[in-house]
Length: 114
Length: 113
Image (cartoon, rainbow over all chains, first blue to last red; front, side, top):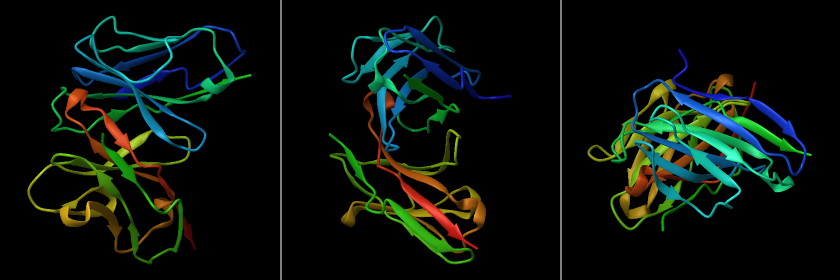
């Protein structure tokens, strides 16, 4: 069974559209994250949620809105997509917000905005 | 704020040769350090981690890393590289607040037959 799963794996869309990426973890973890990997492979944290509550919101445009309906899910909704949003988005989870464990990553969603 | 530097963007080694990937970090407190590997089109897989204790840590796939506080380094090593090790390798440092990871820029490893 996949521990952290994201859908879709690939997403191609036009500028100005609104799209969502879904993430689910079946590990029973309390903390979930979204990371963005740009074209130069640089990985940066976007959001961190613990038990459905936002802990970290890095300098991300407010067009990006995470939603956590329960602690097993953290979806990412993006409004008014721009060319610069093209990237690979990784969801991750860890057992709790104390840093004595590693993060488990999903396979990534490659978003291409045309 | 924490930061991670991986000085080598690309490294090419021959199969069977030894490997060392460099990682330097900047962090105000005791660091939590990780190495992840990303195969083409795949997610990130944890190779090993350091939280405390023995400064030489063993990971999966025959990798090890050594934490050197005096040099602010956490270099990844493997005595004999296999063709399947070709991938992108990321060093990361963890921050307690929100358990967020700060990643280095990655090192792309290519393996020659």
